[in-house]
Image (tube, rainbow, N blue to C red; front, side, top):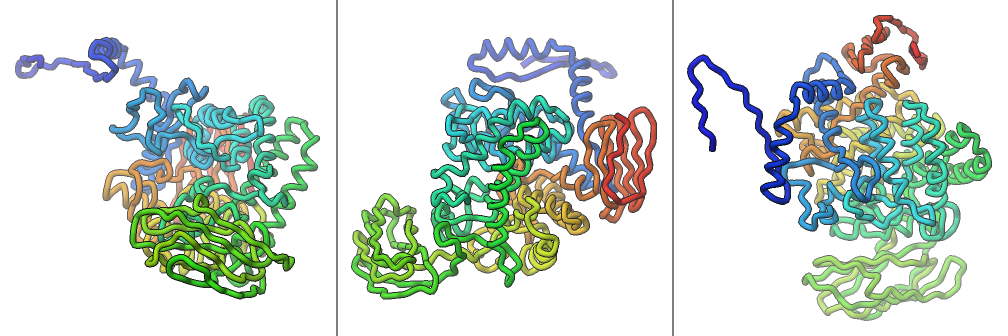
Length: 607
């Protein structure tokens, strides 16, 4: 402690800082060095850096504050390069207790510090572009640098060298093209194109396209940013526990289709024409697969079985208690995949085996053995999915259960819906007529997705009442769906979605002082980690709904009219945009002004 005597009316200026390094001496040396900096110059540097951020003035102070805080939080998530990542990376959230590694290399970091996913990067770019394209380029390079000899890019390369050993979500080419629209950096596209192309083709290898029909399958629900998926999560009792590799999905096909279109755009730009015909053919196959999954009765896309290529409903085929043979003798109108659910009153696993005797769709007799290693056990229950499909079942022989254990045999129910099924609208796959049905009869149906505070992960309010996940808002998915709505002309609806999400966000900021990872679509209550990337205010989506796409201080794209009930002022690095209801004024940094009153898309530029 240092005593200071300060006479009345006098003042003194103090500089203090804290450093925590491996030894007290290192800490003291670092603190002394930092305290000697020219702090006026440091503060000026910080102010200059912050001047690149986008200022929003809506007349609603809560919204304006949320957008400013979202940018501050987003930029605080960036981390410097490490020995494992050559460029700047980012984390999922930043708290005082985060960041310390007992091992000293970051390999023991928690989930929010364990790496960068493509979906995270896509959402981070939504907040940080156009302010810092070089940071987003670095993030993209970090992912691409994890590519292996098979063209596979890791889903989550980490600060400490962690690898998930799962294939990355295919959104990297879409992100690369979004970057190019801002930077016009063709050299960067030239550099990354070979890796983007190899990565795209890697999804179609037999490891990921198991029936080799040109339509790949997810390897794990986490790749779609939906780990606790109601159909595919095996670690929740309320979930169906279906093996996701046995299904094909509209979300993966939509992502891959959009990737093919982005890679084609890049290829034509950099004059690499050879792969274009192949990419066009593969993209068309993906598009047709998605369109064939449209259900007119519910105006939505659905999952379909990997091998039968049909959407099967839930049908309880048989039940029994304990080990033994269950005689079923059932014929099916269409081939079925079987799902087994074992319920026990103990938390221990069972060394069990299941033998299925039935016939294939061609009528050939087949026997399938599901070993204990293929049964996924959690305290109180276990699940398994048959690798084969059956046109009929004779009997099932189950061994290794205790007398009080019960088992239910059912067909794989692929009729349940979730927000990822809406993704084809983002990829531009549906016709205008089908998009109209998807928006008006599904997305904006208040009895389905149109929650009071945004789009929930699942539209069924009652079916999964045991968990909060299915009624939560996944803002990155809402972002992509809203982007698709805008592209089809549903700007007003997208603006209303932004308004609902912002109500949840501003309520959380008022109530708790933090953003939250998720928000309940019905109550707006925040859930999950505080100040998580996924819960930050969607700045880029707000601007897209407003009809403003910032490119530089001298260039901006305008489209449509202001769908919000008040005029909005946007400031970016000396440029000011006054967006009224039917008229927009763009004031450039040198004072020149351009007025636009035509709602048709246009580029306003002095470059």
